[in-house]
Length: 295
Image (cartoon, rainbow, N blue to C red; front, side, top):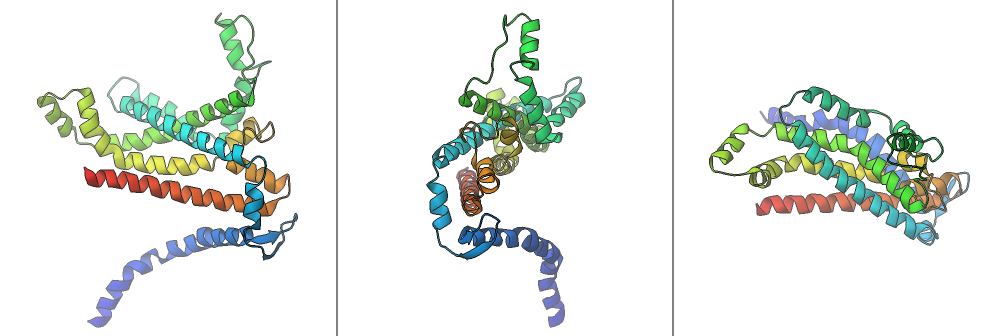
């Protein structure tokens, strides 16, 4: 009897053991290696030397571009995640309605999400070209413009374009996460609310938003991680130029490691990014769960 009880006690852990081993090999172990490198001397060829404490972190923070890069990263994540979440929620509400061509609309919305980010960034980079970009050609042919416009007159405008592309490719993910939550809501809730005289906004605030919040929370946390670590869009459009003015943390540490050969500083920045993500995700989850408990 005791052996049966012991077997039942440990059986669940045996089932998840393969997944735990995979996580240890492909997630935990690499993270440990990165932390080790961040606190060690690293040569230009990548050879890890002796422990040097916080030297890599101090050197990385003292780089002239560090403040600009961190500011860009903040604006990049907040604008892309915030605006794509809002627009994705609206798109999900529309696609949840019954109308002719709904399946086609859902299929079209998948395209920006399914295509590789490098391809999409390259296409947008071509669209906004001054000399032969499609945007100028379309506006000129429609008579909206008399002369071609240079859409990339400053690094601020280029950064706005990068954020726009990031929003464009992120909307589908949010839309389908929210749509899955909307489709799980029982129609009886809306019918009862209609009988009670509730309008659209009342239904939205008391039924739709609370019941779709779990899906929205998951999509937001994943989006924060994905957008923070997004490399192809910024690197393809500007490569951080001019002088790291359009860099985010991920593209900047890449430049440090492979162009400036400052691998120790780059690794230290990756650790800083990892800690920021952990803190941001934890804070968001804590605030979200606290609000749910208050409800």
